[in-house]
Image: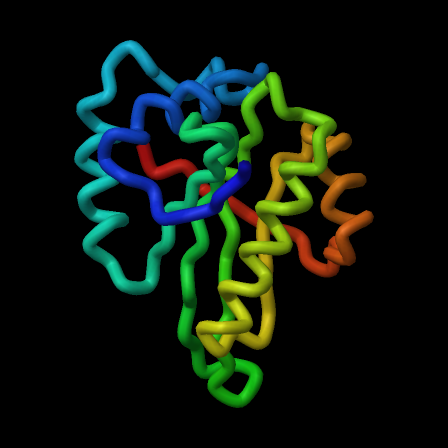
Length: 149
């Protein structure tokens, strides 16, 4: 049985393991030291505009994403939702879980009054880009990031 629900503090280790379990994540995540992740979890969990979700199958964390509600003035004061950190456990890849997670995010965003759902994806993740396009996402903008540290 699959459930998608708000992450708990006890889920941080499993979430970080999934974040680190790919070539890009392996370069930037440090699952051997969870202190920074636990601090970040506390901030995320206390913010009503954030929803750190986990997918559980038979009690085991098998997927995650973070949904952020972003109020704004553009588009006539529209509220958007931003998706970050989508990950599916290696054992579950290809099972349809990623689609279920994003469908859940869309329902959650609509329920919070959002008119747009957006996400970014590293340019190196070509498989992910095809996946998002299959789900109806358009590569309509160019994203820019600037490292501050």
